[in-house]
Length: 171
Image 1 (cartoon, rainbow, N blue to C red):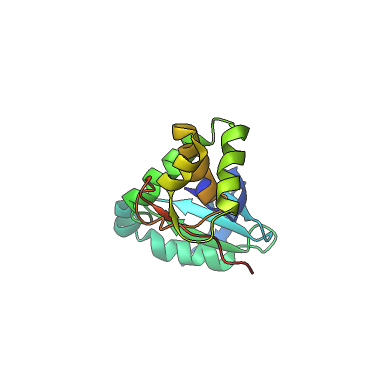
Image 2: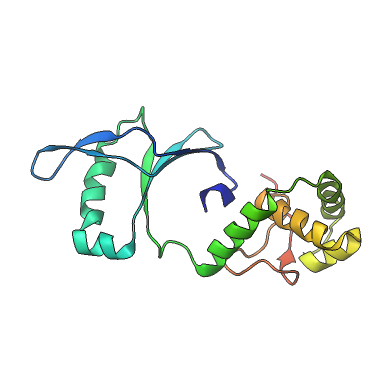
């Protein structure tokens, strides 16, 4: 899921543990699952826990203490992620993106980019694919282009050939 976020440029798996004071004033340690660096340089420490554990053990209260005590040299902020943090569609899209990124296809990427640059109104991903005559290769390239920020679509539902694409707003 992290790697599907456009702004994430680096992910450190299991960064060094940090020390914090518990509610009782005792020194404790915590190891975050990930330390993500964003394209603006901001670092986010991420703890991943099952919903049940968070509720049963009150980890959300402990996490609030940890978050408040994080040294700015380590991270700018912290985030608690549970299995309910993402919808099934978001997980599916991230899994497909991960799979599609495994295959380099410069020809399909360039063909899709050319169609997207010529877009002057919304088009479905299927229309983009058809315009390239590259079928599945273009679907993979179009899918990746969405997550690379070259086109926008509703990512709260599964991305399919019916997904409507628009151009990102220029800032």
